[in-house]
Amino acid sequence: MAGFNPLGLMVFLFRLLAGLPLRVAHGLGAFLGWLTYLASPTYRRHLQENMQQAGIDPALRSAAVAEAGKQAMELPSIWLNPLDKVVPRIVKVSGWETIVQAQAAGKGIVFLTPHLGCFEITAQYYAAHAPITVLYRPPKRAFLQTLIETGRQRENVHLAPADVSGVRALIKALKRGEAVGLLPDQAPKVGEGIWLDFFGKPAYTMTLAARLTETGAATIFAWAERLPGGQGYHLHLRAPLTELSGVTVDRAKQINFEIESLIRECPTQYLWGYNRYKRPGGAMPPPESDRSQA
Image (spheres, rainbow, N blue to C red):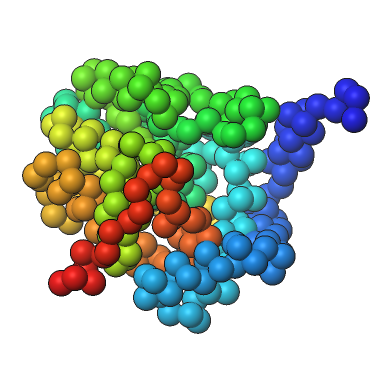
């Protein structure tokens, strides 16, 4: 269609949705979550298989379907509202003392936020207190990049693309004693990861998160629990259960274990429909699970 502007349409729709009360957005999201689950056999298969692989009670599947929809529908509000309107939606914080301790050490902070709860709000909340550089992967559709950059890049939030220049930006931020953030359970491109167990099944796992922890920066796992009835979010912050150590592969294994632990705390709010076990183009096939050989 001549003159059609997909970006303009997306921004218009996002601005409409951004004005909805959180309770309404989450209600609409739960409905759309179920609509997607019923309409997409591929998505439905991934969600069911991934929950089964992790040993999650099938009785929690309904809640997981609804929570995935809520995650999608809360994005416009978080991306397009001013920071002073977004930050107060974090109504409870647990573990802030880990940040205070890390800042006192002065070696920077590596925030690791899995696809759990409202993962988009964690960096924005921290940015209200100090600068943070966040790794992101540009979308395949170019017109979406402007929308994503507009939503994620705020005052004190700096975006680093998932390439060599982005990695350099992360390292420079840590050298300045600042914080960086990334999604450690995001499947990387071929050559940027290794096959490691995730809930007992080999998943192509990024090594960047592990390498960043080798800089001496503090490692903090962060996720925002979605509270019922549109009440807001509970930000959870904690250091690794066991201090990360060893070479890069060892650390990456430990990070996967830590993510599994976080997910078990609130299994309904993990994005089970995400194709975590996909094989990137050009990657070698996965080996047998280390745990299955034990």
